[in-house]
Length: 272
View 1 (cartoon, rainbow, N blue to C red):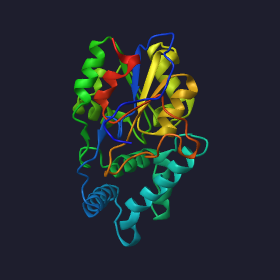
View 2 (spheres, one colour):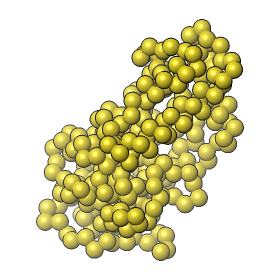
View 3 (tube, helix red, strand yellow):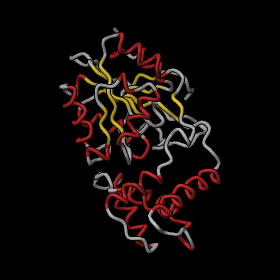
């Protein structure tokens, strides 16, 4: 199907008007069009971990040079298992503590959290950018009287995450942001959506969810009765979530499909 076309999924108009829009973040509002080369990422990770270990009195010798790789593999395995299993958000600092123990380094919980934060290079280093139509679209939605929030699967939050939202210009738009590692569950678990709905005091049928993952965003939202908008992931770029097609592998079909965030302004439930 040609990209750039808004597809209306035959959704019945809701008896109750939509009052708010919730957004996924990665590959929905932002992307990584200029990701650094693998060797640059690897070098930065090794350097940061080496400096942290030195501060703790440890040498980064022998196999310890592979700690960053081992953390990545542990994170990928735990996240995939949770996403396709019980949807409980993994304890990522605990994964770091276990990896460090395999390399002969015993860490306190506080140190494990610092290692986890050190390993996360952050979106600025990785070349994260908002899609160019994001801020104008959020401004237009707010001008129409729609309330905005975000529901996101992330392995960390804390001050650095909130500062990045501020730096990107997103923070002023969102009444609430439900983050999986804080809630304790990954999308599509209903609890993470419910946290956002409760914070806004809204029933699900009054809310639209916009995201790039058919499983996490579309199926999760529709299970609660929200309008589900699938923002197809960018082509020819690394993506954080599934890039499958509606209806594949038994996935729930979205109510609407868009290729750019600005196309939200043309969707019937969001017109004013």
